[in-house]
Image 1: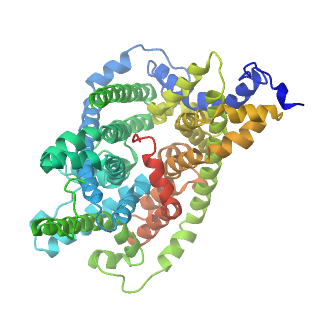
Image 2 (image 1 turned 90 degrees about the vertical axis):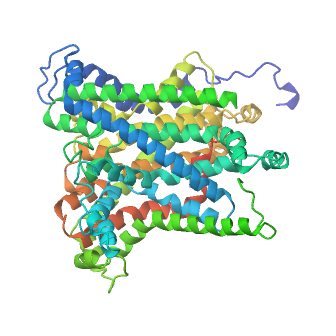
Image 3 (image 1 turned 180 degrees about the vertical axis):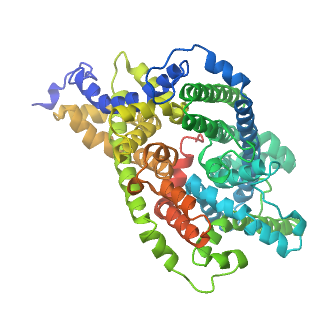
Length: 302
Length: 285
């Protein structure tokens, strides 16, 4: 075959015709549709029934489950808890994470080592984090012993067993786990800010606060959006940590949507639980879309 | 840099700030890492020692804690289960994910956008919320209490993000390479094997790292689908161990330490890629 006879026509992108790309798509599609998409859609369907998990003679009950949701105090409580949890987690994780990232960015010695070390907690399984922190919070555990040894005996308390401290205790454990990731992203973003901009601002006489608010923060839009979005969605779905630490107790103050739905399933209220999970999905979608939109607007203006 | 330090010729005030910041940073890192260190150290102590001397090194290094947990606690089984399930699930995700990404990124057909968006929607949807139909499905397939069910579920879980990331990278493979290969007579499968995959290795590494930790650490799905002790994964095994031996903190700590070691080892080897993977695509430029 002579090289000169390369056809001038555009070579078709479907060489073997239809079938190759179909073949390539098929296995992934099959697994994905059967084990992901269909169940999610099915959940939606079951939420309109009174399925109890065993008896297949379930009936269509319309919006009854959703009406139950609105009047169920435990459900409302878990919904509120989930959002309180999420918002506090986002605030602490991202603000603290950003501050730490600024510190790391100052090119202090061993900065890279610290960044790597800070990332470790996110590699630990949720239940291990839960049990580790259960120990830390227990009577005679790490925190209480520490308080005793410095003479602050009156502060010794069962942090996880009390209604007014349990939620914060769990939040701290969760933030501990993921703050390294947030810092990592912020540090990476900080590194992309061209120093020429900062130097120009310094020459123009801008103090550090101005540099911070007018140059650095706007250019941090990408990492802020990713961090806030992923931490929000992740904390809405939280389950492992809470299950291992308090399982929703005491008195339901740490009950979140995830733990409550599982409790419902265990009790056989599968139709109702499905409605709960549909609500969870809707919450996630709404949060996701609004955050993506909001941050998109911010990034555009930058 | 906010304050733009040049240590040698900055004012004394800045030097003090510099040292202060260094101390704060070191202190912060110690505070964060300390629970893990404490865990590892305490796993060699006796239960009494853990509660009487939480801050000190163990008086004697009791490896027997680990032996007990590994043998009698059944952790050898849990460990193997986790390895097998994670490995096979990752293999499926990578193989099928790259095939699907290839089918989306490098071909043109009418349904392409539909398929792409279909996979994309999986990124926001939590599979956890579909637990009821999923459980029924597994039951109807007679896969209850079977590790294969976990493998399939984890594969389904990892596919959306994998397809998204890989198709993004595959789109950047220049068409000239493909044309040259076709002229040499290669068919699509060979092109995929010999050109697309090797060029996509960075993104494949990224995807591996991105998915391996959630799959290994997952607790939710094993909790629902596995009941026989011998088939449990590591996180689930830890949970049932904790439920059984709640007061034996020395054993618990040994168990927890075993649970965190694998991912830490993976991390140590791949820390460069981890960090690159976590930040890739999230930050422009």
